Image 1 (cartoon, rainbow, N blue to C red):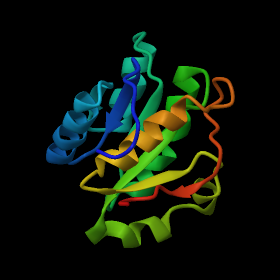
Image 2 (cartoon, helix red, strand yellow; image 1 turned 180 degrees about the vertical axis):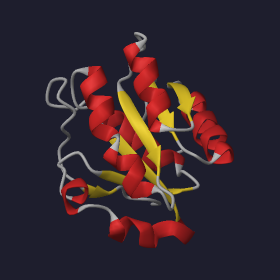
Image 3 (cartoon, rainbow, N blue to C red; image 1 turned 90 degrees about the vertical axis):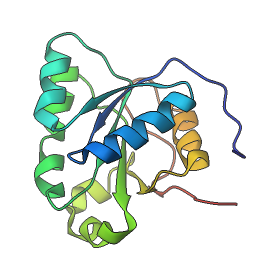
Image 4 (cartoon, rainbow, N blue to C red; image 1 turned 135 degrees about the horizontal axis):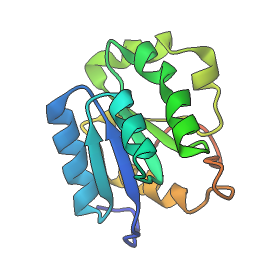
Length: 150
């Protein structure tokens, strides 16, 4: 682990239809001291928020159903009452799916994409960026792919 990280008490919603990926990403977050709550579908996250659970950010696994999953992000924001920072995670074998995402998703100021398996330093960089948000509106400085490796 090369990146500098001071554990903060973040609560991250982890949405991924792949149970193994949820476990792996959740373990990575746990090692870094971030709390996560796993969900198999966006509708489960919306229900949790409406039940009173609060989250600082969302990690979404991108798979073949990416457009459907991402279309539900507005439901999450409505339930939370604000936009949440989002990190999209995609396996290298599914990168072509990213090119099929709606242009408005790719153009979002807060758009972040990280290949899986998740690189710990890149995950730390994203968690650190949560501290640089402009208030609580979910915006970050910069957009695009997170740097991976040295």
